[in-house]
Image (cartoon, rainbow, N blue to C red):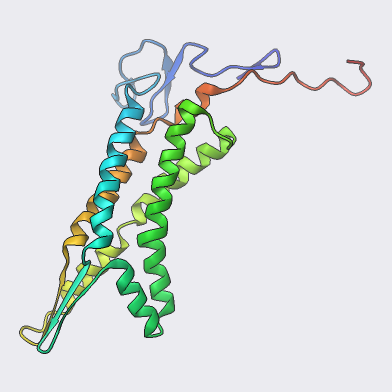
Amino acid sequence: MEIAGALRTAREMGLVACTRCTRVWPGGTARCGRCGHRLHSREPKALQRVWAWWAVGLIAYLPANLWPMLETRTLVLSQESTIVGGAVDLARHGNWGIALVILVASVAIPVGKFLAIASLALGVRGGSALPRHRRQQLYEVVEYIGRWSMIDVFVVAILASLVQLGAVAQVSPGPASLFFALSVIFTMLSAQAFDSRLIWDEDPAPLAPPLPEGRPA
């Protein structure tokens, strides 16, 4: 809201918004009258929860890349493939498109999410070079791509259910699949724990509105 050239937030006006249905209520209201969600001007200990889920997700992501994601057994051999190793094998056989999808979904996106969440949390306390609206957009992107981060687990589950030829050949998930799924879940919880309203709390004093043309300063 703009009054006399100054921008005022809902918090400064004594209002609080429901994070579930976005309805705005007077400050001090305990619960949203529309959906019943508990109201907080800012989520208590939001950054602590963000860092806790972030750290657990990062810990789970390490064995997800070091341990085998897929175990293949046939009559003559037994093979274990990590995420990166499996992508490299696919590239060697000419399947560059599939290898690229696996690397992007299993390496680039998870690492990017870790970096994005950490930068958002650090920017709340220490400031950031990114403008506030860009950080808000970054937060929305992180939340949106979270649902697409399970592609490796889905591929392993499909292969394990389709390629079951008894004693001839068998495909089964490796231990990394569990840790990869846990890492995705923990990073999603970390992103959801972040209260994006904290981005706007550091709003500096607004600039004075420009003077009309022809009027001296």
